[in-house]
Length: 242
Image 1 (cartoon, rainbow, N blue to C red):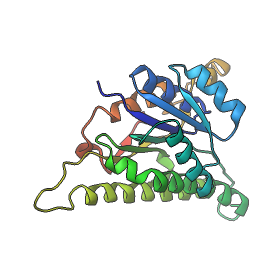
Image 2 (cartoon, helix red, strand yellow; image 1 turned 45 degrees about the vertical axis):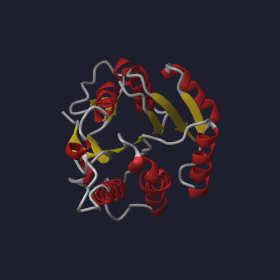
Image 3 (spheres, rainbow, N blue to C red; image 1 turned 90 degrees about the vertical axis):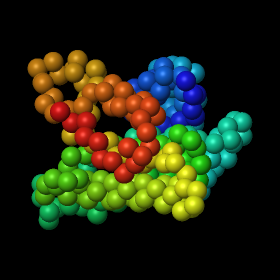
Image 4 (tube, rainbow, N blue to C red; image 1 turned 90 degrees about the horizontal axis):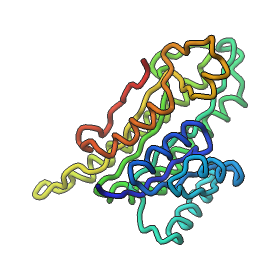
């Protein structure tokens, strides 16, 4: 098995812990990133498998550049995967009361962080024999409601950006007509209705969470991305909602 170096952003979340744990259990080296030093260290310890906690404001391009420098200082020459789990939720009653503050927060968390991370690490992912960029989106992006207009629009924008990265990978790896490179990098969208974890189930035993995706199921899907061919995966929107 090839040991890869994978960056998990949004690593302090329940999904970040689950994904970090699963990737570590699969034998990969995981760098888990959060905005708060105490929280990300606790999350890395909970995930185990010697995950490396790193702190970064992903909404700042300069900060993400510093993150790349920190990774290099750790003796890591390149990143093979970025699993982007930075999220958030903002809703309202309808169109008229969609607040600017909510839109700005969603744009920052769902779009700006993804743009920054993918731009800074793009060349490394494109060059890796197993390069993967994956983001988690929502079914709301293709079936938006008035109440979730800002959230849905931000997720749709993030999906469009990811598909553009997929196109970049495809073009770069078929650039030479005489000797095209086999597709080895892929950008993928993992789609859920919402995520649920064990703590949520335990705190609300009466609730069935219909259509929700367990964070462990998401984690297994992420590990599987590195076991499937890039040509099959690149540009795909994979539905995990049940």
